Length: 215
Image (cartoon, rainbow, N blue to C red; front, side):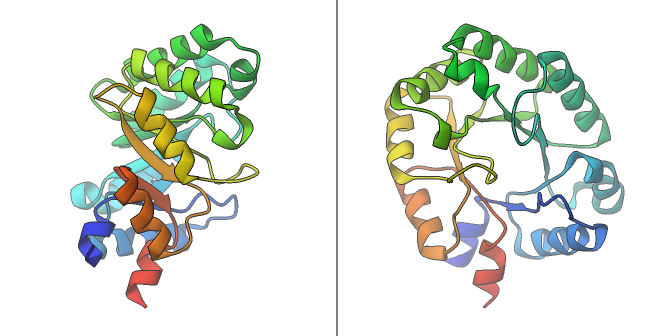
């Protein structure tokens, strides 16, 4: 794959707790220059990015992040505010405790509520695969599909481990035809990025792809 074929699938990401406006602005400048799919940033920066960059880039932000245990009403409120501020895409974290408790219908309803708040905006659902067994991952594939979210996403990048190729293969067997896949967490090389794209991922969440390709 050439450089642009890779970068058009990258959500150029900065979600560190200590992210400053200077680091966020640098991320956005790179995203504009290298035409990444989006920038993925903390909610507190969405409005400022939108005010400064307008339609030069797509803005993705995170909801219920990174642990997922916000109540549904809070996730919906966060989503509505993010969209009002100018977000184009929403990456939400499921309630992992509910997943581990087998409350799959409850998780599906929460995803549906956030998708309704998103309207036509893209919703990616982070299931944090490192904490789930195979049965739970399959259940989340069904929940994401049934709730009509746009993507299933492997990881927050803040868990015990990140994306794994075997999880992408499992997703492909169990998601519906309208659901795409985003891999994130621990993807640190161009070779890994290409491997996840070759496996069928439509998006890659990483902070490193642009820097590596610049080098």
